[in-house]
Image (cartoon, one colour):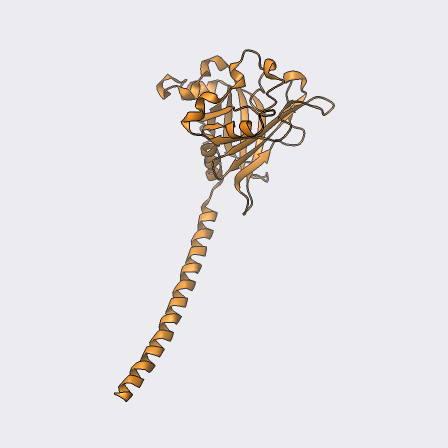
Length: 259
């Protein structure tokens, strides 16, 4: 019995050691396999995948209500309502947003960015009033949308955020901005940050020839967050007013950029 016990104990010890070795080997294999899959997934992310993610992140209804309650002297509860309008032949996504179009596509290969976000005027903005709130069969057709894309306004070059940051993409207009004459401005600049939690931060500002800021938020970007339906009745959209200038003393932020 003693011999059997000893033999059994020794065998158990050897089995335990072998089991631990197999377990460690299996863990190493899983970790290696996971790293390999992750690497392949990263490599499989194409330039158009970045554009698709940005377009999807911008789409939907978001509000700056939380920021407005926190700092009512500088921010209103604005609604950011964006929706798909059409897709170009080359795959570029066209979104509708507050009397303008956004075109989302990959940055040119020679540029150090991932996504090009450009805004365009609309030939007949009245035809697109409440575009995103309408049933799809009551909106202008895809062909009409393409035909109504007018002059280029701005372009923001977005890059994927570095690891560890809470954002997905961030970027701005090129140095010097773009021509803009609203409210005495000579040019304007824009910054956009898309966060992992669905927030979109935008900072549009206008400057005169001397570099003085003449419109736009001064304390920081507008912070748009997905909001529950209960807050929908509280928002103010400055573009619904006949004269945005009447809000100049109170609204110094985004979405009053059009003349």
